[in-house]
Amino acid sequence: MYEKKIPELHCGISIFMKVLGGKWKAWIIECIHDDIRRPSDIHREMEVDGASMRVITMHLKELEDLGILYKKVYAGIPLKVEYYLTEVGLSTLPLIKAMDQWGKEKQALLVKDERNAVLAG
Amino acid sequence: MYEKKIPELHCGISIFMKVLGGKWKAWIIECIHDDIRRPSDIHREMEVDGASMRVITMHLKELEDLGILYKKVYAGIPLKVEYYLTEVGLSTLPLIKAMDQWGKEKQALLVKDERNAVLAG
DNA sequence: CTGTATCCGGTCTGATACTG
DNA sequence: CAGTATCAGACCGGATACAG
Figure 1 (cartoon, helix red, strand yellow):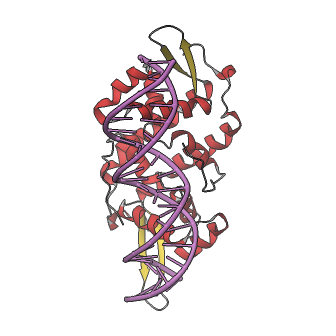
Figure 2 (tube, protein in one colour; figure 1 turned 90 degrees about the vertical axis):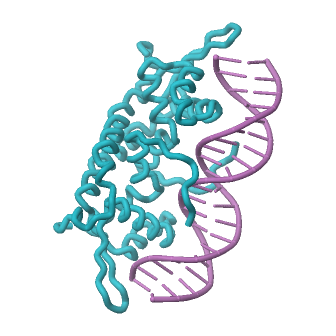
Figure 3 (spheres, chains in turn brown, blue, purple, yellow; figure 1 turned 30 degrees about the vertical axis):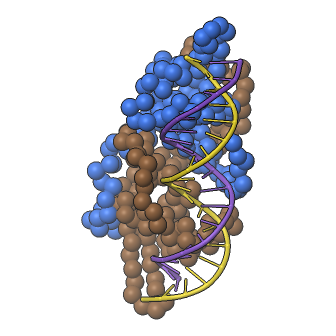
């Protein structure tokens, strides 16, 4: 682990980014919302695209510490763990959906092209 | 400069993050929307919080290459440059505002606390 | 199954000096 | 004023090995 040494901003944006800034965090939140709650299942879900178990664990922990996820542990061998969305976690879903939709809609337009300029400024 | 070597995801989220993932990009977009159009003015605007001129220049260039900003150059000495939002750039404003508002609203709730758990899952 | 520790390399940012 | 080059250091993720 490491400690952050570069000071963070204190605007709403950076707070939001602290929650959803990680590479897989939004995806993880969506998984859990879709009833894929166990780390191994989440891992299997995105293994095709290359998320390692370590990163998933790290993100889950961060999201738990931020109060986005709630961790439920079932004692026993082998261990069983499930993650649930908290109320705050649920409140991220509309934004995640909006971001995803924006990306899909605008993807084709993300090109340098003077014709896209807005003259009104 | 460097070339990206880690494969990117192709979902809407990562496309969105390519546009607003930088530390200062959302702020820069808001500045330009508020008629703070010249690099030096933008720099002055956020100098208190530590954005270096180099990072601002880099972000401006990236946003221009993505078609979020349009760059207008006035010849002469000293040089004068102004950036304007394109239509795609304008379309990010509602999301930026939503992200900022979410951060401000939820900031106090971002704490590990079982009471926040949603039992329904 | 879940989570931690360690290493390593890619990525990003801050600082400074410099060109036009 | 606008932008570039370079360096150093912080950050982040992939891989592996290992412990509970």
